[in-house]
Structure formats: structure tokens, C-alpha cells
Amino acid sequence: MSERSPLQNARFAYVPKMPEVFAASISDIKAVPTEAIEPSVDRKSLKAIFSHSYGKPAVKFSQGANIAASKPLIIGVLLSGGPAPGGHNVVAGLFDGLKRGSPDSRLIGFKGGPGGLVDDEYMEITAELVDSYRNSGGFDIVGSGRTKIETPEQFEKALANARSHKLDALVIVGGDDSNTNAALLAEYFAEHDAPITVVGVPKTIDGDLKNEWIEASFGFDTATKTYSELIGNICRDAASSRKYWHFIKLMGRSASHITLECALQTRPNVALVSEEIEAKSMSLAQVVEIICNSITARAAKGENFGVVLVPEGLIEFIPEIKVLIADINDLLAGEHEAFVALKGVEAQRAFIREKLSAKSSAVFSSLPDQIQTQLCWDRDPHGNVQVSRIETEKLLVSMVRERLAKMTAEGSYKGKFDYQTHFMGYEGRCAFPSNFDADYCYSLGFTAYLLSLYGFSGYIASIRNLAAPTNEWIPGGIPLVSMMNIEHRHGSDKPVIKKALVELQGKPFLYYASQRDKWALSADYRLPGSIQYFGPPAVTDASTMTLQIERS
View 1 (cartoon, rainbow, N blue to C red):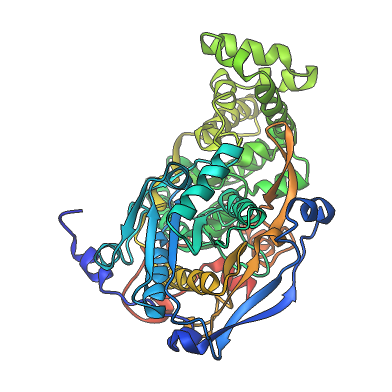
View 2: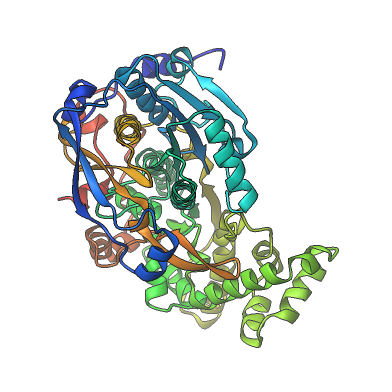
């Protein structure tokens, strides 16, 4: 970008804070294996698939002699999936670690994600290039992509290209599907006696790549702070104009972590949590009733305005819709050619209705034509329905209006309902990373270098104790296989990293549940404002409320 803003210049000068152990020279940082970690489910199946990777121990880094410190390495890096704030700092931390170990080390970036590895599209990452991207948002330093390496030919090409570059290691920065690919690549390389270490880095603004060892995926902090600023602005506008109910759909394909965090930050009148709706087997009509209850109660106070937060993946968690989507997925996987050969959306909808079971066909037919069409659009490369393109917020508005009209006729609602709809997603994916994400990502990149140096293949970089000051963070890594399970995708069973959903007995949700009835009636919105990069640490360096509550 040719012309930089004053903030860009200031952020380029920011020096990320790091765990205390990383202050030592590379020769004084050792890897300490800890306990072996196994998957929580599907152990027998996973052990058969990952015979070279299964049952490895977790590892942490501490001060101690490192005899391999000065070894020159050639490491490849690729960015996979959607962007998340801080990705450039992962590359910077990886690059700086490499050069601290040996100035003769090299970093090769594969362009456009996994496809760059398969097609051998690459570039040398230099100090000058890294310096021009430090602490900035986006993934444009080498670009990203959603290619999934899954065919024998793709695996063969990936290995051949890694060998041609004489890679010692390959670092894959991505979410659950991308890191599943990293685990499969590590296993494939091991099966073919290729001494190339494969390391993953946990990225996703959705926040669903987490567990005891991975306390947060990077980008979640910045994205939710970006959304919360905008939601807070809308809350203030709602209270000022006093005439609209704002329905705000938030990113989060499979989990409601973003919605929950933004609810904790802003205190909306309604925040739907997909995991709770599924656990209670709530129908679409019952979800609409939750919203209408708040609208009706507030109208009785003369307040015909409010804010509703909707996770984009909500529609997949409503039981009858979830079954419907699974049936459509299987149908399209088996009859894809016949489906795409049809001309016009009406013919495609008719094809789906005819081929589905009677129950799913009835549910499908009950939805507005526009939603039916959106449910049938092309899947992403991982076989997932593209929920960001399903206008769930507009579906809810339509059903709320219909329900309120009946209540008006019955005399149980006497308010005035008008609305605005919003979708907040892409606004947060490439924001300037918060200080937390800038620090976290740089440390993740440095950790990925150390895992590569020590040859911990099939591992994902892990940093724990994230709610504490940065110098108290604990860097290490865990085997990717330990995070996996077997799921039914594209009509067959496949190993994938298990998504971390909102825990209904977890501290963050329980706190929200204890407050939501009060928030449903009030206009006492919380206004977090914009991300602050300069000022007291309590303002600039604070992590998400989710993390603070979890680790309190």
C-alpha cells in the first residue's frame, strides 16, 4: 500500500511483547516433553489413520541448552482459509526466530494458501518484506486460499515441491480444517520417509479452535472488539432514534463464541446462542418467540427499539434445519452432476424437494424461496454449507413480523415494529490487530519456529496462560491428532479437528445467562468503543471478556 496513514506508521513501529523464555538466545531455549495426549473420542480409528503421529507428548519451552540452535533451516509457510488479524505477525515471529537461530536460514512463502504448495507458486520472504507488514491486518503478504489437499495427486505434488525446495519444515497457519490438512500432510510425509516437519498455527476469528492447551485462536480478540465497537454504536443509535429493532448477524459458522463475546461486551436485548438452542431442541418458532417476548415487553414500556445478535451458523443448530442441511449435503454429494445440470433455481428447488425424505421436504418447503435457494448453493471446499450467504437475520425478521401481526390481532401486542438488518463479518477479518493479537501472533510464529527446529512434526503451536501478562505466557505445542475426531462429511467418515463449541456449563455462558433477562428489558447498553493501541495496559492489552471470565 503506497500511502500509509499515521496509524499505519505507528503500528509498524510497535515491538510485540513476548513470553519471558523467548528473551533468551535460541541456544538457551530447550523443548521439554510433558504428558502424552490422546484424542477424547475415536481413538482406535484415529490411531489406525495416524500411525506415525498418534500418542505423542505435549511439549513446552523453557530455559536450557539447545544444541541445534545455530542450525540453518529452510522453512515454508502458507496462510490457509479466511484472513484473521495478526497473521502477518505470525510470519514476522517465524522469520525473526529463524534469523535469530541462523542468519543463513530462509523462509519461503507459498502463494495463495495450500494451492501454492501444490502448484509450486512461491516467493522468498525477506527482511524488507516482513518489515513492511509488521503489526498490520490481512493475509496479503503471500495471500491465502481454501484449497484442500486431499487427492493422491495433490499429496504427491505437495511432497515433491517441499523436497524440491529442500524444506526442513512447513508451517500451516489456519483453522480447524486447515490444521486437519496439516496433520494429514505430516502423516503423509512420515509415511514417505520425508524428514520435513509440519507445524500448525491456530487461526480463526470464530474462536472454535480451542481446548485446554489452545486457549484462544488468534484473530478472535481483534475481530470481536471490532464488532463490539460497531454494535455499541448501533445500540446508542437505537436508544437515540427509538424506532428500530436492529437484527445483527455475526460471523461464526459453527460456534457462537463471537456472538457470546459481543453480548458480554455490549449487553444487547437478545443474543441467540446456537449451542443452547440445539441442546434444548428448540424449533424455529420457539426461537422467534424468544425475540418476540423481548419486543413485547419493551413495547409495554413504550420502547419500540432494541438489538438482537444472531450467530451466522444459527440455522444449522435448529434441530429440524440441521437434519435438513445434512440431508441436502448427502444428496448433493451423491447427485451433484444431476443437480448442477438443472437450469434455474426453481428447477433445483423442485429437485431437492422431490429427492428429500418426506419430513425434510416439508421443512424445506416451509422456508421462504430465497432461503431454500441459499441452502442449495455450492458448498465450500471442505463440504460445508456457506452459512454466511444464508440471510438468517432476514428470515427471523420475516417470522417475527408474522408473529407480531398475529399477536396484534389477538390484542397481546400493541407496539410498533420496524427493523434494520446488518451482517458483520468481513469488517473484522483484516483489522489492525489489537496489542493482544499482535503479541500473541508474534509469539505463535516464534513458537512455530522452535517446533520446526526441534522436529515436532504434526504439532500445533500452543501458548497458555493468556489472561496473564505477556511475560508470563507459557509457549509450547501439542500433537494435532489429540484434537481430532471422526465426522461424516461429503457422504463419508473423515478425520477432522473437533470444533470447540460454546460450553453451556462454561463460565462465560453462565454469566451471560444470569444477566440476559435483565438485558432483554433494558436499554442499559455497554459501549466498548474502538480498539485502543496506546495508553494504560488495562485499556490497550486486555484480552477478551471470554478469556478473562474463563481464567478468573
